[in-house]
Every structure is written in C-alpha cells, then in structure tokens.
Image 1 (cartoon, protein in one colour):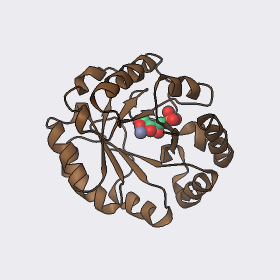
Image 2: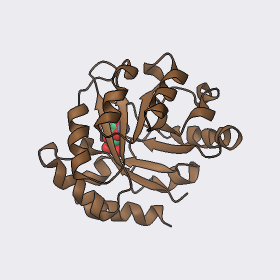
Image 3: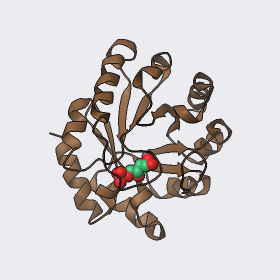
Length: 218
Ligand code: DX5
Ligand code: ZN
C-alpha cells in the first residue's frame, strides 16, 4: 500500500482546531490522529469523546483514535459512536486483548493494539491474526515533541516479519518523534502509516504535510 500520513492534533492549536484540521486535510493528510490521555495510564490529560464528536462534524478524514487510558473497554463504544474509525488501545493497559479487539470490530471500527517502546513485538504473536493494525510507539506516550527512540526501527522490521507469516494485511503505524529527517528510515523498516504531531503543526502545517507526502509517495 502507499504509505499514509496521520497528523496528530496534539501539537495543533486547540483554540483553532477546525482550521488546523482543514489545513492538513486540504494539504493531503490521509487520517487524523487523536491522542486521548487520562492522566492515569500516561502522565498527561488531553481530550475525550466530545472532541471526537466535534471533529467528526468538520472533517471527512478517518479519525484514528489512540487511547492512552486504563480500562479502554469502558469507553470504546462511546468513542466509536462519536465517530472514531480506527481505535487503538495499549497492550500494557489491558488484560483481555482478544475480547477488546472483537469489541472494536463488532462496533464497526478498525482495531489496533499499541505497544510502548519497552514492550516486545513478540508479545503480539497470538493476537496478530485478529488485528487490523499495530501502532508501534517510538517515544514514551504522553507528550508531543519527543525524540525518536532509534531501537524502534528494529521493532518495526520484526513486526513486518511476523506480519508476513501471521497476518499479511496487517497495517503497521508508527507514532512519536517522526520528522522529515527520519521518515524514510521508518518507511524502509516497514511502516504503512506514520503519525507526525510537532513536525506537522509547528510551522506551516500545509507545507509540512506536502513535504511529508512527497517522501511518502516516492
Ligand atoms: C504521544 C502521542 C503522539 C504525539 C506525537 O503520546 O501518542 O501521537 O502526538 O507527537 P510528535 O510527532 O511530536 O512526536
Ligand atoms: Zn498517538
């Protein structure tokens, strides 16, 4: 598949969210990445269900909702009802992974699991055949603007190997510290979707999206 760009609104100006979203949409963004943080799973608090509902009114882009929350199963139905198209929850924040993946799929959304930088890719072996996508964190979740952890590249490569064997249609998404300067390495390792927050919304978002898209389409 042609790689996709998912700008993360975490680094957007929340007071001008609709304009920021429409700028990246017009410039060619493929998905809109929404970071949901609860102040418990991660040491930060962001946005929730009402913001997803409002975003659904102002964009045609699929909403890629990254849940950094404990007990994700309690809130997933509300997020899908609000308009989430892709839903991912953290491996480390859940116990019954298979049950939650089935829950997301039954609600009609794409189901993904997120792994933290220190969580081995091989922990996903049993669940991999059931997943639409895996989100590999290349920073510790909680904040935008952090530095890419270089060992993430090996994890992406390993995941691609496992996917060839266990789930050839698996989509691999990578999140954290992705910049124009390292996006080619991330793609070469096997990513299909790259998330970029500060690298898109700091400066001129439309120009930044266009520059990313050029590298993705190469
Ligand atoms: C971090 C979030 C990321 C964040 C990425 O917890 O999951 O989506 O917005 O921001 P950058 O691209 O600035 O690292
Ligand atoms: Zn994210």
